[in-house]
Image 1 (tube, rainbow, N blue to C red):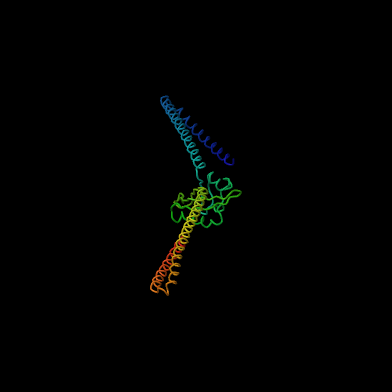
Image 2: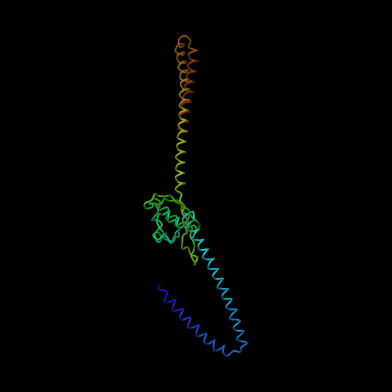
Length: 271
């Protein structure tokens, strides 16, 4: 409303200038021969048609620009990811509707706020490094952080940012895309839990199998060693030579059993 008097004043001055020119033109036209007047009228009519055609072209161009603007707004506000425009300090200069939804704040309350305000405290250092990387590396940079939202469950998001130059060629803004990766994070955590459970079951099955093998094989070996020692005890006086051979066999069997125990223990420790 404050600009209306200025515009009205300018239009009034422009009209007075046009009327003064017209009065001058009227005197010039009155002094012209009829043939020249007819030629001037024709030229004015042609010029009028040209102006009308130009005006029509301007209207078509305006409609095309408005349609392009509407398409841009639709693409921006209804994109599958959120978009933020940040300044060098990480202050939010612009945002689309998905970004507002992710951050849990409407647009008018979001603009002018520091983006780090919405990042979980444990991830704020990571986010600050992320904001510096586009300027240091000159390429897009990605980080994953958790957001803390008022009256809403926290979400995990991926920030992908790139620095863009201003008219002077200096990096003045950061364009950031936000993608909700909460579902992916939950799926990854579930997959890790399932994998850990499968590994535990596999290790338990291996341990049980080794335990059975150790139990069955060792019992047989110890039983055979015990029998050889009983035989040796009976032959010590009656047949010392055979007793010595039996004792040698028993000691060998015992050493073999010890090696088998060590092998089983190593396999158990590795699993």
